[in-house]
Amino acid sequence: MVLLKIHNWSELLVGAAIGILVVFLALAILVLLFELVQYLMLNSSKKKQIKAGKTIEEIKDIPANEIAAISMALHLYMNDMHDEESNVITIKRIERRYSPWNSKIYGLNNTICKK
Image (cartoon, rainbow, N blue to C red; front, side):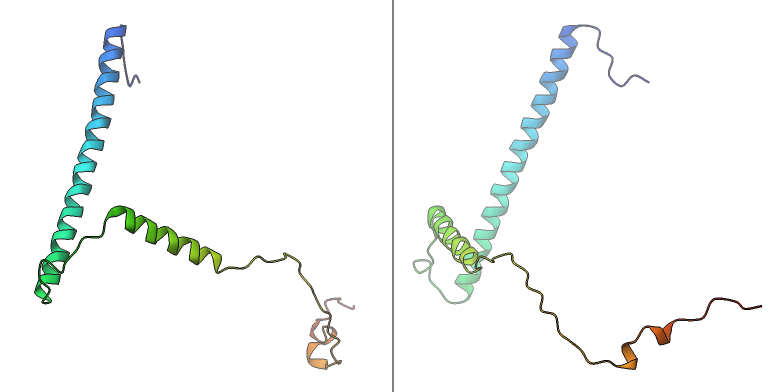
C-alpha cells in the first residue's frame, strides 16, 4: 500500500508548500478565535459591571503588563510558602507489650497431615 506516490521534485515541493500553508492557516484561525473569545469575555464583563450599577468611567481595563506582574508575584509568593525539607527519615522503634491478639503463631493453620 502506497500512501504518497511522488514522481518528481516539483510534486514534492507543491506538497510541502500546501502542507506549510495548511499549518499557517490553522494557526491564523486559532489566533483569530482566541482574539474573538477575549473580545466576547471583556464585552460580557463590561455589560455585567454596567448592569451592577457602575458607569463607563468607573470601569477600567487592567493593562496586560500589570496582570502579568500580579500573576508572577502571586506565583512567587505561593511557591515560597513551602519550606525546604531535609529528606532525612527518622524511624523510632517503639517497644510494645506482648499481646496474644498480635501474635502470629495462633493464626497459623496446621497444614501437615499425619497418617
